[in-house]
Length: 107
Length: 334
Image 1 (cartoon, each protein chain N blue to C red):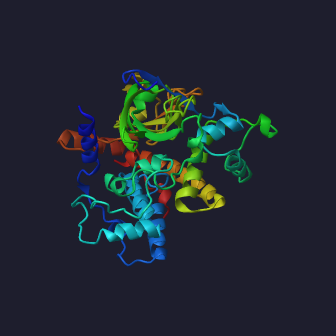
Image 2 (cartoon, chains in turn green, blue):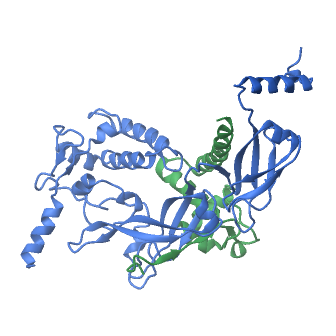
Image 3 (cartoon, chains in turn brown, cyan):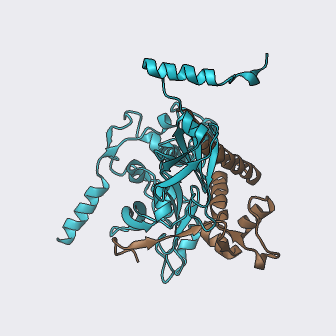
């Protein structure tokens, strides 16, 4: 699998069109289902579909879950705090991209 | 090579010289800092340099360094062992652990894992091994006979053009493997990644089977790469939308013009409508990032007036001003 170094590895995009089941999301993020359930309850990620068995998560959830999880783990914030932090961080990212564009216009 | 020779070579590689790390200095602390002070200093620096928070260059390295320092100093046993080395070293100084320095301490052994622990320095490794402490990622799972390998997560910086055309990027990944001496070793592996068309900044791409190897008959884990774009000399990107600032002359903006405009997909001819103002955005539908639902591209007009240098040019500006009764400051009141 890893022997041929020259082989090209094809990557798949995880975006809003990808659909992951609860199990797939857990495996993708490397966290237990209870953690994912807690994140759903906190409103950090929103599954489509009714009932856990039919839940489908968008591909962008993987990054959100990983970020919340690593903030919780590394900084000792609780779930609600980590959830707030990533919402603010995402907003800052949007603003920074916008700022970079606008500053460019002034040059 | 004889068996004895092998053993010597391994031993040598283990006691190789490395740079001493001053964990107190890294956390900005005195050597007599209390456990509470250590925790406070770590938390503060961790918040500042966390790779999910700081986009500063070098933040990730700093975060790892701070994490490594905390890993040692938060644990009274490791701290005591580290302190025992004495304070006679300077940061960066060549360092070899004294023989049997860790006698009486039990750091080695146990499951090793953890992308995070892999980032620790040779200095740390020489003292505490790789994974004599609890890694972050599911250590217990690795002891099962058959288990899927851990997923790994990394970042990759690509050019905007790669998202349009699907280029190939080589990345280097560090991972640990059990060496012949039974100690985890850090190995580097190069991977040619085909970037899928239409990726946007902040998105993740998944490379199936490129994570940590599985255990027993378990499948390898997957590798997840978070995409970021290198700054582009021409374009700015927000999500799937691409912007280009297009300088235009005042007469082009006033009279309309047909101009050549670069786009990531190649040059196009763009019609600038008459009486366009500076800052006007012309939309090129579907010419943003070619995602499943493609983004748009905006050309932002920047009316750029040339300086009047020659007498003829100054005269032209005078004629220009006489032709208009134009007060650009009429909106400022009074």
